[in-house]
Length: 121
Ligand SMILES: [Zn+2]
Image 1 (spheres, rainbow, N blue to C red):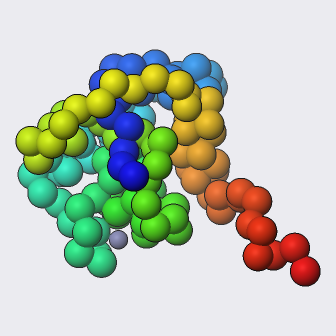
Image 2 (tube, protein in one colour):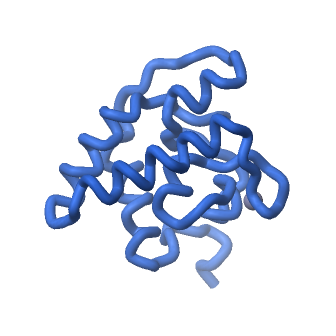
């Protein structure tokens, strides 16, 4: 499991499409800052590397602290952040609407709601 790399300009395009009423320059500057922080090795308060995309929305924190999920799978991260570690680079494709809606729910202050089979009783 791991992040799906996406170019920053591609992600900004997705964000604009999903948030037509927002000022894009504000989000872009926040994203640039969190990407720069992540590339410099910024850490979450729990000690894990920050998730740049989520950190642009809610402030510097790691994927798990932001989403409450243990592992990223089909979640985006800016490719230049991922490249910093010298790991392999995958090609982002698909997942677009799902991923952007997750991030933007966070921005509006709602918890991510996804079906939880343990809560059926
Ligand atoms: Zn954390």
